[in-house]
Amino acid sequence: MLLKSGAYNNVFKKRLLEIASDAEDIFTVTPKKSIRINTLKAEKEEIVKKLSDYIIEEMPWYEHGLWVRDEISKTIEHHLGYFYIQEAASMLSAIVLSPSKHEFIVDMCAAPGSKTTQMAMMMDGEGVIIANDVNSKRIKALAHNVQRGGAKNVIITNYDARYMPAMEADKILLDAPCTASGKIMYENVQKKWNYNRIRIMSRKQKQLMKTAYRLLRKEGEMVYSTCSLEPEENEEVIDFAIRELGMETLPFKIEGIKMREAITSWREKEFDDSIKNCRRVWPQDNGTEGFFICKLKKF
Image (cartoon, rainbow, N blue to C red; front, side):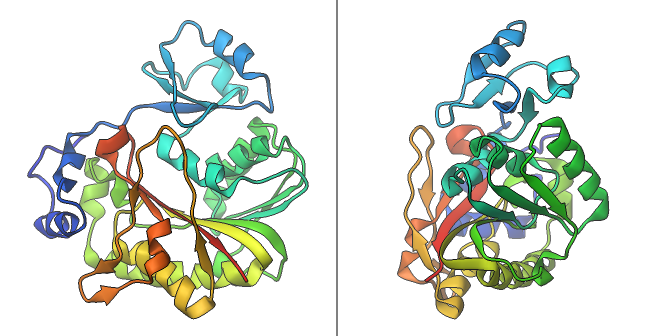
């Protein structure tokens, strides 16, 4: 159920307007349905042909992403893993990380597996992906999606990601647990929003960032992302990685999608200037959910 403008928490509204002057436009957006083609199962052309009875449209920023207008979850192609139902903005994390064949990747908070299986596809089923999640129930969904997607290079682990054992990862994806305020147009998300949750998540995210730094080899790269709009969960966490861990942000660009620069200050906090390399995806710009993404390197 979508919220009508004015039905959301006034504190949240005030915070949003401090970040972006057009923030209220979020509540006019109904995110479009999207799927990701799985080339581990078949070529894109073959899968698109199988979906010829459905209204689909190419996604301008990702060759394997498609917009869909119809209910497609009960199709045989979905059950067989020819495509994955995935929110469009969430596809960006793996695109920016750009995993390659023969690399050792750690997906720290992997369930239910959308980004894990996307990376496995990008790696053509080669290399190794450690797909970890703390929640044993969500692990079942992760295992199911990995199997259904034919992702043979994935090893599933069940750690609290803050305490994962030592590794030397080439690249790390930390799609961190968050308040999900980028989905605030949905009533169930709006009802859960409160400032205390932001503070709790921010502390956890910084702990996860410390672990990511420990697991990453020297000169290794990582992507940090959330589906949150909160500065405490985004820019503040990156500022922590820069100042406390010595990491550096890396610029990136994706053609076909509008992304805005991250904010460089929040209330009384001034962030490191290189925060500008991070990007925010606002729902009103692309018809997606809200998203934050940053690429970092360990030196």
